[in-house]
Image (tube, rainbow, N blue to C red):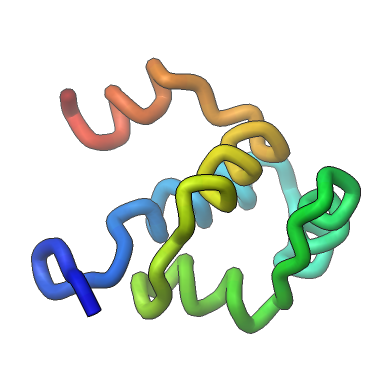
Length: 80
């Protein structure tokens, strides 16, 4: 498995921060993702937030749509 800084993903903290900012539980996020055609379990979200699971590009886009993450948020979060 490919990794960056020994982690399968680098968006775990961003995802958790954005989810909590919207006051979504993991189950709430699963439901919102399902409405746009992405099936994901609460456990998968946990694993992503704890940098234990790879995130596919379409999943990342879905997270951005559902959690209102903008490109400027990404730049600020990653200090780009």
